[in-house]
Amino acid sequence: MRRTVFDEDHEAFRATIREFIAMEVVPHYDDWRRAGAVPREFYKKLGALGVFGIGVPEEYGGAGQGSFKFHAVITEECARAGVSFGGSSVHTALCLPYFLAYGTEEQKRRWLPSFVSGDMMTAIAMTEPGTGSDLAGMTTTARLSGDGTHYVLNGAKTFITGGVQADRVIVCARTAPPTAEDRRGGITLLVVDASAPGYSVGRKLEKLGLHSSDTAELFFDDVRVPVADRLGEEGRAFAYLTHNLPQERLGIAVSAYAQSAAALEFARAYVAERTVFGRTVASFQNTKFVLADCKAEVDAMQAVVDRALEAHDAGELTAADAASAKLFTTERAAVVIDKCLQLHGGYGYMMEYPVARLYADARVTRIYGGTSEVMRSIIAKSMGL
Image 1 (cartoon, rainbow, N blue to C red):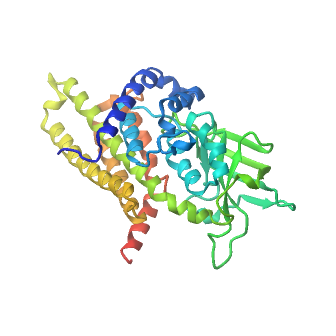
Image 2 (cartoon, one colour):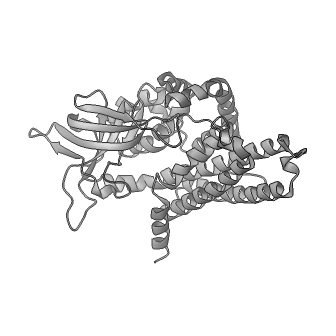
Image 3 (cartoon, one colour):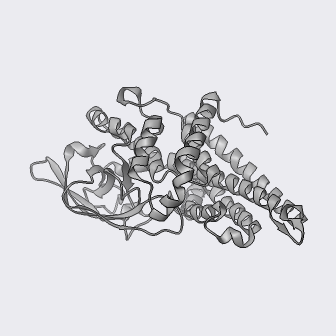
């Protein structure tokens, strides 16, 4: 079926990204995986290409394109090539919406030009060692100084994508304790300078997948954060986080679909060339049936993702819609990618083959951005259950 979600501008952008990946990423990607991060200079290349400025208004150095479809194009092209852009998706898809929606004019003029160029990389720190999906249970605190000029930040965060190389981190911290009536109140967003005294990066965490994306522990020991670096109103962070979750979950759904489509193509190409018992693997009926099932699954995922992309651009994507898209695509991706790996036989278990990397990378999509169990709860609530 003809795909209609992307227009000529998106497809021209796709061609640019595809060429960039072939020239600047594929030749170096194995080294990046082994290093556990992309080089810092690579982010400046993405900035020069215009990737970081797509959604930034022109007055701050960006292109002023509000459509999330450009982000989807990047996700699809990275999956197609079996690579990633490190932690850059957090920079653009997660952090940028907070700067745009809750930053003051002074903050935008101070931060966004270097955001666009890649000179300032950002991350967001929500999860703590003792809290996962229950963000209201966070214990990191930020106490306002007596003279009201700064906060004193103390605590720890973990699983922070891009945290090793980030220059500024949006940190969720308690500026007031929870109450019995409202556990979610009293949380504030602070844009913390990674060079501030008392700020430290712990371990670069070793993960099952996403090996080219650095993931860190962060620690705050009496870090002074100017009040001028508070994002939005004090105590309103939980509402801000909830507002941005549909886009985050849509991004994960796009990734799950793109990974599945890529795995299908890798498997199709492999079985057409691999021979067993004097025949290509593709010639066996079982292979044909397995790939046919996978194709039907990928088509369904594409339909869900495209509908969600249209709804998001129209401002109509609800929390339940995004949860449904994420739940369906991530759960089905697990099945599709597993089948595609199986068709590779022993080679599918080797990390030199992209299907093995996709298998490892895709597992986290059912966890981050809200677990599948949380998605089911959101969907059920929307049904009045």
